[in-house]
Amino acid sequence: MLSRFMSGSIRNLEREYNCTVRLLDDTEYTCTIQRDAKGQYLFDLICHHLNLLEKDYFGIRYVDPDKQRHWLEFTKSIAKQMKAQPPFTMCLRVKFYPPEPAALKEEITRYLVFLQIKRDLYHGRLLCKTSDAAMLAAHILQAEIGDYDPGKHPEGYSSKFQFFPKHSAKLERRIADIHKTELIGQTPETSERNFLQKAQMLETYGVDPHPCKDVSGNPAFLAFTPFGFVVLQGNKRVHFLKWNEVTKLKFEGKTFHIYANQKEDLKIILTYFAPTPEACKHLWKCGVENQAFYKLEKSSQVRTVSSSNLFFKGSRFRYSGRVAKEVMEQSAKIKREPPEIHRAGLVPSRSCPSITHGPRLSSVPRTRRRAVHISIMEGLESLRDSAHSTPVRSVSHGESFIPRSRSQATDASEGAAVISDEAYSPSDSVLPTPVAEHSMELAVSRQINGAPCSIEEESEAGTPTHGEGGDFGADGRSAQEGGGGDSALSEVEQVNKFVLSVLRLLLVTIGLLFVLLLLLIILTESDLDIAFLSDIRQTPEFEQFHYEYFCPLRRWFACKLRWVGGLLINK
Image 1 (tube, rainbow, N blue to C red):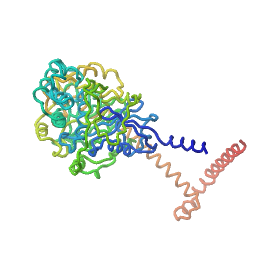
Image 2 (cartoon, rainbow, N blue to C red):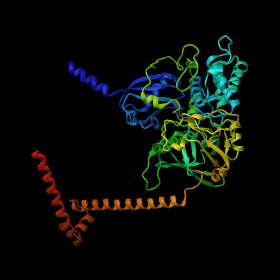
Image 3 (spheres, helix red, strand yellow):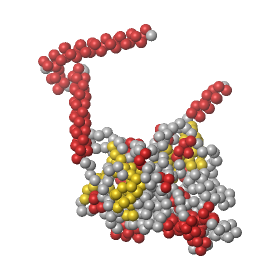
Image 4 (cartoon, rainbow, N blue to C red):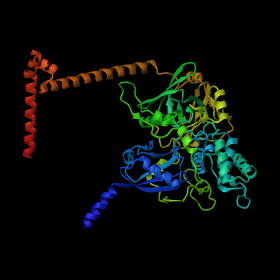
């Protein structure tokens, strides 16, 4: 009886496993789920724990043993997606950045987005000039430590906080001055809303950089945004394509292609090279999901997308979930008492090192709280706080998604937009994605589009500067004329692809003919009483084939099968 009970318990343990998800406030939510549970089940558990209704903007990120980032697919089994063995460790992150985060319906959603953008600021993904950086940091101080108090905040207190990868003493003094004089009396909710309004107007808002190289070998960062596709090189945004201009996203191995139709019937192809085939596939899937989420009017319009050309075997992927317009319509219908929010103070962490003011609190409601404080496992260490995905700014399919000032600036600007005096090179965002060549991390200075730009080492990137940010609306002509990845495929590449396509067509044709021949032989040798088969059987050619080739071959196979069967029986 005892042995039966123990064996049953062991079987139950084998069907379950622990899963730890690190939340945006660095607390951890641990649960036990069935081995066949799908991603949607885990995501719903987390959203219920957070009391989060506007959940379509968020996703669960994990990193495989090869350090490649992935978004957990909600329609598939968790165990089948993870290449490692349980227990599993993941992170909750913003997957689709809201075009206007300050306009989100519920405060809990705005707060979680606020935490994500604060991470972006620290890791250098949200690059901005010094005046904007000082205001953003001051809003963070006001939201998390309250009004300035001389008794609690001594001279130089802002220097003990680190909001950016690096900053100067002058910037620290400016942050303190704004916090002391301009933000007095603001509640945490007001400061967070003002922070979001300021952040959404920045050129690099929500950028999730994918490191690549163009056809000339120059390093670049690709990003998908609520309003389109962006390429950042050096201190410039060299390409911007609206979602309604992008016609196709495709990848082959490590090569990523973006097909677009711009104004004046201008067709362009942008080509970039990812570090690994896995990184390229992740880039492609992110693009497919972002295009479907921001461009389509209804989720019923979502179609399965293939990565390949005709006769080329490729990956197939389908976005599952609601689109942005449906999410906004559903959010407007929310009617409930706002959930209580326990905001976290500024505390030391791997993502945002700073000083502690009082005991640490959770940033989420304590109802049904299951977060546990456990040691960080190896998988979570490799995940890194910056390993999240999101899009950048541009113009979308629907003008209703665009803040008016940003829309006007986008339409008015032309050419490559300067985002800073320094190169865009986020410090930690690209770490989980392996880079094949060491030259990607070295200091490189090249002449791109007639203007000098540099790619610094990752540890030196993302500093707020005084650089005047340019507008984001490059027209189609600049996308075509720019050097690097904007040129069409070379003639040699086109010839190679044509030859490969013809060879594949030939192989497929021969294979089909061979299969049809086998099928015909099987049918004619069968006892089926069909008119055209009877006519075939009566022809001299078929009778000769039957007696001279088919019958001997059949006897040979039967002899071999009997011989194998005898060996198996004797054993």
